[in-house]
Amino acid sequence: MTWQNIELLVDREMGGRQAIRPDVFSVAATYDEQRINLCVDEVKVSRVDSLADVARPEKRAGYGQIAEVLYYPAPVGMIEASEVPEGCGLLVEVEPCKFEVLKRPKKRRVALTPHHFMNLILKPGVFTPAW
Image (tube, rainbow, N blue to C red; front, side, top):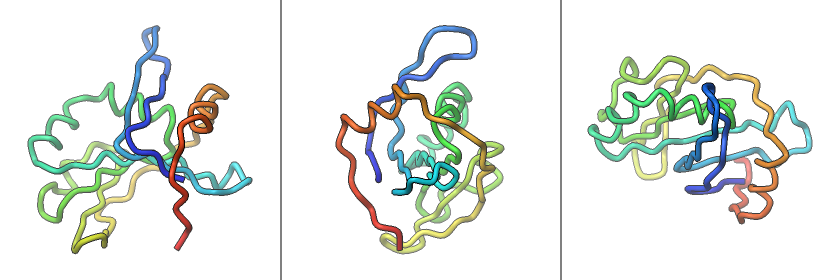
């Protein structure tokens, strides 16, 4: 299942809550919580956009509360793997709708809260079958 621009609330380390809105949030259609594969994709369309994101660790920290992995999809040649923040992955579009992994993200164990699951249930996503 995928959601585009879904807003979720996460707790900040220093107190309070933060609204996050990933470009794409996806979960595997499974009953096995070990294989749910919570993933955020922050799509980059310009170099300026990617550099601005790298400068915002608090945004990545928010995504880290809901996603096991974080990828930056971008056109080939726009971002170098060395520019991608530690622990994040880089996908490049080598031709229309065909992506290659240039940098694998570090997978972390994440458990969504009941509040997050209710958000996902109440906001329609798109079923994307596994290929």
